[in-house]
Image (cartoon, rainbow, N blue to C red; front, side, top):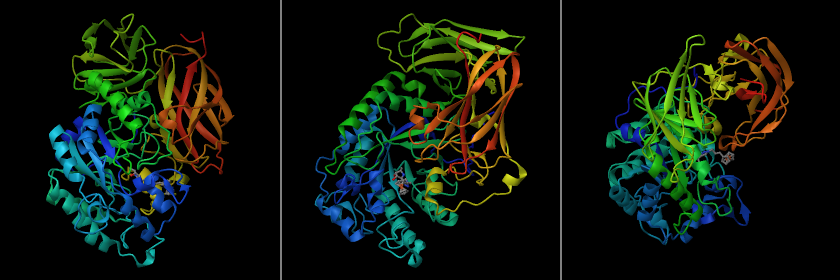
Length: 606
Ligand code: H79
């Protein structure tokens, strides 16, 4: 069973239907930081560009002069919306006000806005709203409700303003609420307000802000980062890819390179293929993908972003039916061959490669009525078996000898079922003989001593606020399964993990344990673990034997450690246990587990 947290809602948000159907949206980060393009007085900001003011503690009096040279004459609202539409995106979220505090619309609340303070002198949200209406894209606004480096009472700016003199409520009343009122009354229907980084905001204050939104536009959604678990849907961490299916409504905001706001030197462009895989990966886990572009100070969208969005659009044209309006993979785990989504009585198998003449699926109990390649309307032969001795269900679909020319990986194989899919939710040995035991499917054995060290996480902790928007988790400082599906915060040698799984064929396996670093931190390792699988056991030191090269590991460094060779003689129910003999105190993340994998040694298994 999957133990990934679910987004606990105290209500069913009205108007969430379009958002669930959409699955894919465009994020736009645009503000004064685009003028710096990542550099201030010859110094380039490490990391994300829109944080330059805070990173260099630029005095407000200096930062605000950027407005004088902000003249984005090349901004073409219609072209931006067409770019989103062509990419297959269904909603668009633009930074009305980011942490810097600068309003990107004609705000009467403060002159610190694009109309009053720049030579441009126009409100880009007007043509943007019109273009969204014209092209059928939902217009949404990002609004930083807690961090505001311009207002003396906003959170975050402690270089111009004395934190001890701040009255945060005054900032909410003087700036946040009147500005949100403008955004919700001046531009027609707003799909959602994307709140972010709820540092230093109380539950009551988050509720006040949410209630204000609903009082003006009852159907306008609020993002999970409003704080305190009261959003209409959950927000994963920036660029976070969970390890398995999530329950409830989730979204991951993500970048095409590494920055959100335009940063001239950031050349870390993900490939179109990687971006398509990320979209597929998230859809398979029931997560919306909100993919960012950062226009420059002229208002131009970087060429690299445009090209990648066009590539995604071509793929979506052909394969969108496996993404839009779908639910997560009914299996709690992911597959080596690709991902799966579900729509009613249909399963969409999205294959990353065509490296086998057949695709086999274990554990599907529902009868398969037919299989096809929907993109080319070609039926495929499918066989379904049930082995009474092992209790194992098997489906095998035969792929054509060569894929039709217009089909490019990842490609979709559709399975039409007699009813809603019913699947075996235990970890199963896969048809390629591999066994993957993901951390989120483990049962945790937290010792009473560890469990007692439960602490409240302060809402002033920036990382807790962003990475832990899954704020509804009971957070303690003991071992737990985080929103991303990792076993994290393992600091006690008394704690352990266990999995049960089904083995179909006896064999000899390479056992590898995958461990992860804290976000943005280096991988440390150096722990000693003990692993038992059936009667076999081994101890090992966590060393970086294999570098995981997966987009998911981009911000969360992941390494595989070879544990040993294990022989499993008896097919059937098996179990595995992982315990810690020594946890390296030098690792800030503690022991953080992604998965245990058993790979058949060549020529042995089966
Ligand atoms: O809008 C984007 C980011 O600016 C915003 N969320 C996405 C959607 C965001 N707000 N807070 N954070 C991200 C956390 C920021 C962490 C960091 Fe830093 C900023 C890491 C490096 C720069 C703060 C400053 C922590 C270390 C240095």
